[in-house]
Structure formats: C-alpha cells, structure tokens
Image (cartoon, rainbow, N blue to C red; front, side, top):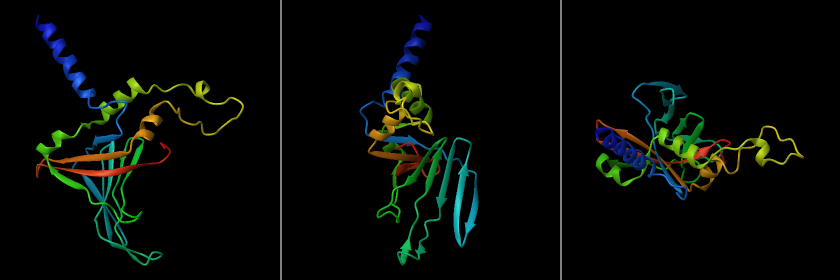
Length: 187
C-alpha cells in the first residue's frame, strides 16, 4: 500500500512539472541560475561581470551608457546569457538600448509557468523527437553543415514569440525577469 502511494505521488509530481509546458505555448519562462561567483572584466572603463557555473553563463554589463561613434549618442548594451548550447541576449528598445528587466517579489513568481533546464530538455525529448538527416533533407543536394530537423526542437524555438529568463535573488526575496531573444543558428 505504501509503495502505491509513493508511486501515485511521484506520478502526480512528474505530471505537474511537465504540465507547465505544452506544444501550443508561445511564451517560455526559463529559470536561470547564474550562481554567486563571478569575475570582472574591464574593457575601456566598462565593467562586465562574468558568471559561469558550467551550465549557465551570464555576461552582466554594468548598465552604464557608452558613446556610440556612428550613432553619435549614448547607448546601454543588454546582458547576454548562455545555457549550454543556447545563447540569449536581452531585448533592446531600438536595437541598441537595453530594455530594463522587471523585478517582482518571489511570491508573485508563482503566477508564471517557470521551468528549469531539465524540465525543458525532457519536454523537448518527449514532444519534439529529432530525426536522422536523411529522413528530412533532400538527397539531391549536399548541404554543409547539415540543417537542423524542421520538426525537431527547432520548431519549438521558432514558435516562441517571447522568451523570459527568470533569476531568483533569495537575499532580497525578489526575482528578475528579463525578456531575451535567442542568438545563433537555432532560428
């Protein structure tokens, strides 16, 4: 009897973890654990904090404006994030000035369907199975490098209209939510 209760609990827990994601979602809230340890890089008076803990990396700029010689005005560069092979960059207002992130209380974070990297990877494995290249590409042409499977994980990233990185700050009991765009060959 005890084993059955434990199995029911585990099944219910796994269902609630993955029920946060569905194939029709166009918004992704992804938990980001930058850690506490960082090193500072100083480039021409600008300080960038680099957090890297093996899986997550964040290049946090100091938020100071710099003069753009071509635009002839000051701009504020966005932070950039990397989660294993996925690179993200904070959104900008006009292509140059960063959009300020939203800061909310941790208890208000429960309203958002935030998922971890493990939950996202499990969801992609179950719902977006990758095929072998010969199953979806045209064999009359050789394309190097091989294109990604259009029905695999690529189709998940393409359907997303908004991606938010969620960082928790346990000391101040707040969460920072930054809207980002994916960078690289995912799209």
